[in-house]
Image 1 (cartoon, rainbow, N blue to C red):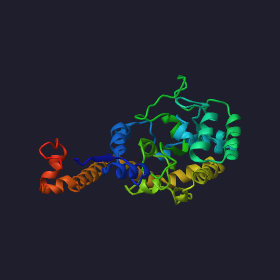
Image 2: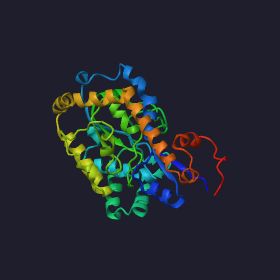
Image 3: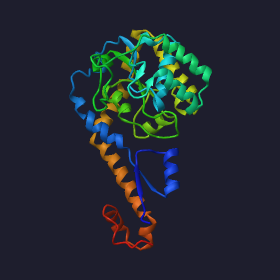
Image 4: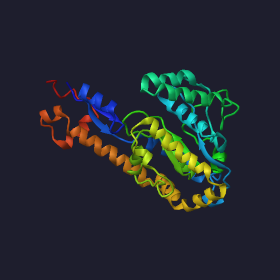
Length: 320
């Protein structure tokens, strides 16, 4: 059989390990969403609605966007329930609907969390009770639409973001062992907002490995190392609760203190070197994957020719 190189944007993933082991794939990692986010958001560096940090008037403590809330994204329902339990909904801008556009009512979605992720049924019942008390739907952006559209390629509710202190990122993946981030994590970077990352364990560390700075000077970021999904969610809600306990004046002062970090991240994201380094990482990994292909080694093909052959049909190489 000819070797198969699996190009993937996942790192340290159980799913990746499964497919590599089952099908003998050769993994090749590349951070796809660096390229997607840079392509989608590069024009915002010239957007005058994104105000300098020192020119902002803070009116809300946090902002969080939650469009899909069922199946694997049911953790977002848990998180909004945690915010409601702590009486924090009014402190921020929250997007959340009782009906997920793809997975139905939150009650059904939360039952899925019990069966699929072994979340305690008593805890789920409490979260349902908290969500039942909310006025649905909660909406930040696109109020004229029946449901929030999937507009990953744009920054939504920029005006509201400019008057909000903390951006609560609710990423695509949460439950599994996986280093995987999407364009969602780059949105507060472009908006120059401090953030917490509601995602898989160790993904904040993964993000920092690309040169970005975060906010452990101002709050506890040890949530990133908590493996238990409910405990990690509660640790993140603790940060939102702490932020919500501060006055708008205190948050304004804190935001000004953070300006060097926010500017560093903004400049790094928009720099050609950032995208070029991601491309170099991908091409290096691909070359190494090609060079490790057993069939190419078997037929003593020189290393200089292996990368060229990987991008063309391997018909000249006889099947063993």
